[in-house]
Image (cartoon, rainbow, N blue to C red; front, side, top):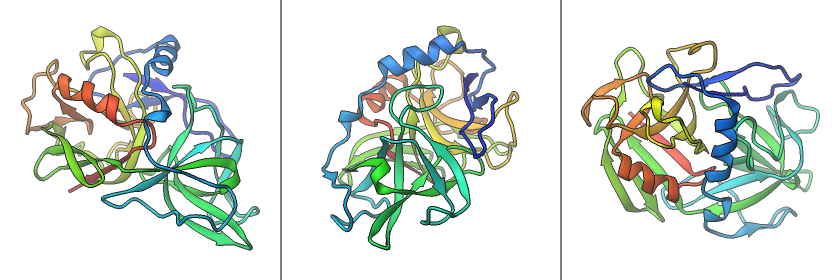
Length: 268
């Protein structure tokens, strides 16, 4: 099992978050540092940077052809509504917790309030799909035309650029009692894992959490995309605790194509 620090609430608290995988594995913090060094750089994201002054270009939620990501550049508190005194949801920092590297979040929408633009961003933590509002000045906003779509009924995963499919695979999905969560999510990180994990050299962690498990090995049940060959269940089956498995060679391609913040749509 991969271990990651829990998202920082306000006030912050300590603990460990368990990434939902299919084997129980104790992973040392040194592995997380290796993941930080090996993950595809944020420059892999395509598109234009939006200036910090409102109104600027329209910033909207994900569509089949485009989405916006927000790389946190200043410590900031995500709030339940776009107001500096609204209730806090999560404390965000430029360096992502546990995995290290930049904190890049998917933008779900935006709103201009009193001349200042606020961004509604997907944040880590349960329940699945948690989000909060941050002022735009705390982030560098970029447009991307990349996205991952997992279709649970068809048991397929596709990677798209500007709405065009560039990669397709049959996948293993969550079992009946531990289904893969559905909704609009995003790539969290791409950590390396030890060989004994039998998940492949690296996995693609997703900002998605189980809706049937409240914890996993003492931490939050987070979903990942990883190799299928080492765990036996055939492609097209429902056999995982919620993770999505696909062939190793396609995982390798996906790791290079989908940087942090890339939208991940998981549909029934």
